[in-house]
Length: 132
Image: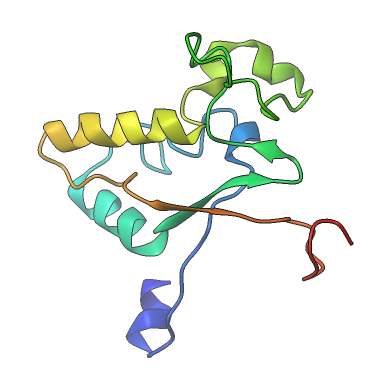
């Protein structure tokens, strides 16, 4: 996307279905498994300024195993994916957890790669509303 932008094409990516990423969406490591550095954090912030928090396949805000004191944490959160029974597969896959991870990285002096806005959409891939 940086190359597109350098050619005058505005672009961005909007991560979705983070709730079934197995924790990979908002990892504390870069895409190659190394620690997040300033270059990675800046690229992530620039290229992914939004995250889809809700859609037809459920919500990615939080999960009951991550937010045990929130009585609404289970609202449309469960996907039926076997891996969601393990909290280790949930951390790094939900927005609330990403916000906390980003703040932790910022406290260490890095750009917060998980400072993003939110959208909700149908994710039906047909361009129509979710009830069509």
